[in-house]
Image (cartoon, rainbow, N blue to C red; front, side, top):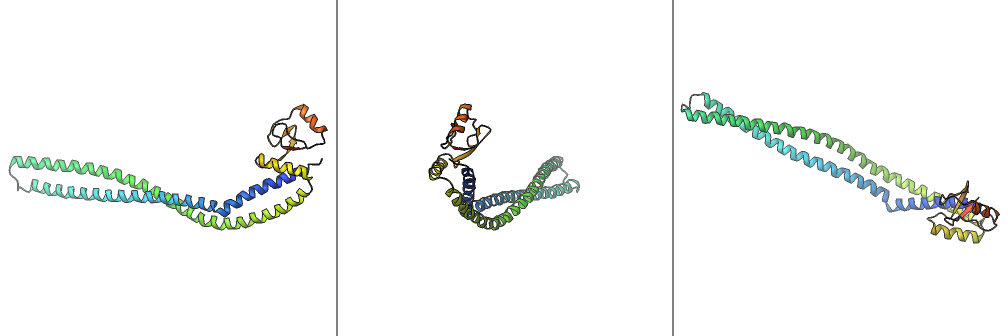
Length: 234
């Protein structure tokens, strides 16, 4: 019984399964939706950078205002210290202590401001990268939308062509063998027939025993793998 055309049919069916799955993806918008979701995620990341930069900007403004206020107060106290308006020793000591305290607080705030400004530079760099990534992905969404439409037309054309070719090949196979092949395809994840190469089934990739190989060579019935039961084609 001739089963040689089964491999050609199997090749077509595998291609048709792949094309059908791709058609479903394209028609359901899965590809475009995935691109949009990635672009949306990038925009959310960019938004988080912007929120953090706004927060750091507010903190920087507050720190700068506090430093300016402490500087002005320190200058005013320095003027009082040396203008002769205070003669009482205890008042002078208290004023000197206040000036020292202002300097210490201002110095501490200036150190904090430097750290904050460094953080802001890092976030600005991150925001720039996030902006670039977001722009790239958003442009990609438009590109995917156009390409998906073109690909869908190509996939449909391929499906129609291969379906026509399948009808021709299927007609060349005897009905009993074709029916068994179709049943096996449903049971074996789309693979109903496989080549036998160097004593190994290309469907399950198992080696057949020498006894089984000898038996298959002599049989006129449909040859099947002893492991996966798929139809074997020598």
